[in-house]
Amino acid sequence: MTYRRLAVLLFAITTLSTSSWGQLTNTHTTSPYCFRGSQSWGQITYYTNWTYTDSYGAHLFSGTSFQINGSPAICPNPTSGGFTASSSDGLGYVLKTNGSSGTITLPTIASGYLNPKYVIVGVTYAPPGPSSFVNYTNSTLVGNTTSVSSSFSSQVTRSVKVTKSLGIKGWVGGSVSASASTSHTQESDSSSSVTISKMTAVSDQTPGPANPYVGINHDYDVIWLWLNPVALFTTFKTSTSNAIQWNGHGYSTLDQPAMDVYPVFVGWLNGDLAMTPAQAAPLNRTWAAGEVWPAGQGPGLTAADLQNIVKADPYWQCTKTPSACPTAVDPTRFTLTFNQDFVYQQAAPGGQPGTQTYSDTYTNTTTQNQGATYTTSQTFGIERSFTGTAWLANVTFDLSQSSTLTWKHQWNSQISSTNSSSASLSITGPPCVVSAGHCNPVYSKSTQFDLYQDVLFGTFYLNPVN
Image (cartoon, rainbow, N blue to C red; front, side, top):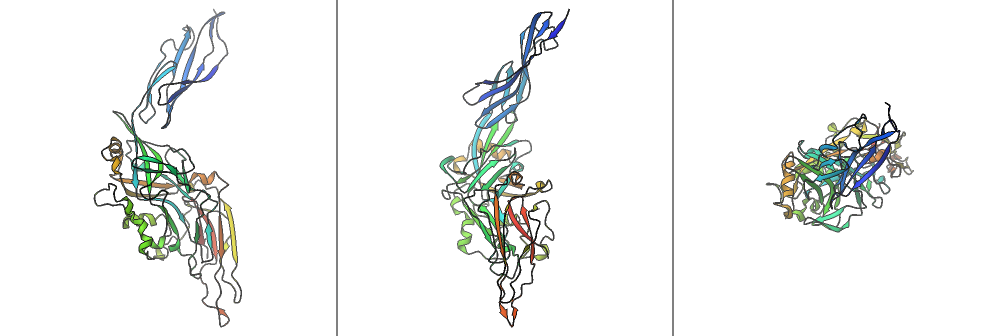
């Protein structure tokens, strides 16, 4: 008696309309026919790669179900069954299959947002001298890549879902507005992080200090603070599990009908430079006073907040406390972008200072750079429309520290995947004011600088080399 299989394998994707909420699909393969002599005894169809897609993303399930066609009892295949044990995607969605059919049990799903005081969307470094500048007109990489996973208990399943769009939406009273910001965009680059990018239509130019003889003065570095952000979350709850999905950022229209991104000098934050009342007013965020805040907290940035913010610039102490200034460039955070020094040289008596200009697309970061991080924590407010809701109860229960969000800034993966984004640099040396045939004052600081890129914020940093 001879047994043989016919060498035929069928492969297809099956789409099953499971409910009005989403769509269930699988991949199926059909085994060759099994024969006894010249008689066909049957075959088996296997169903794998089960995926349920709804507005919260694609939910993947493990496991294989099968369906027996005919009577393949004499073949080396399953002889009974067709049912696979239920499996979960980690967010509380549960799949049960029987052969080619499947059903989905949904968790309890709720969405809302928290109101942090700020998000750091950039750090730009001042070049030497008042006639020098760095311009980011053509750059979409000035921004940040952050994760909030460490804000939540390790017992909670965490995920990220952001659909890349042309702008960031405004929110108020739990509802989204029809308008969107045209200055920034966002997208999720991994299962845990979101990247905010400046759009090319926005030009951010950072000049050097007014005194041309001091060289690099980090008090004039700029930290770009987004002062009306909201952090969007969806919670998924079952009787046995909690999960949370970060849906990226929006902005609060309680403040104004646009993103409020405010440039703050490092010298304001470390105390070297005084802020006028008008300059400090946006940091008070008085428009958010009607939100619910933790006891002893309010909407304005505190001294502790300012200290957390200023440390995003590794050179924040260089002018105030030179002994605390880094003596070497951090090779994890900064990548050398140009293999030539830039010159900041004083003009000769009776002459004019020279100017060097440079425009660069971004340099691929190394594996070492990809480990760069900066972490900060802050309290948040809650719009009154969310008080007493199940969504808020779920979010606050999932937090690892009460009323606190922790932001982990990390390497921007887009720096390694784009060559169309660029920034320009112009360096003009100090003038020579002639006195008795000599320059007075004489510029005595470094005349040569190496150009680096900050892989966290996508910006240029000039480092003195002598």
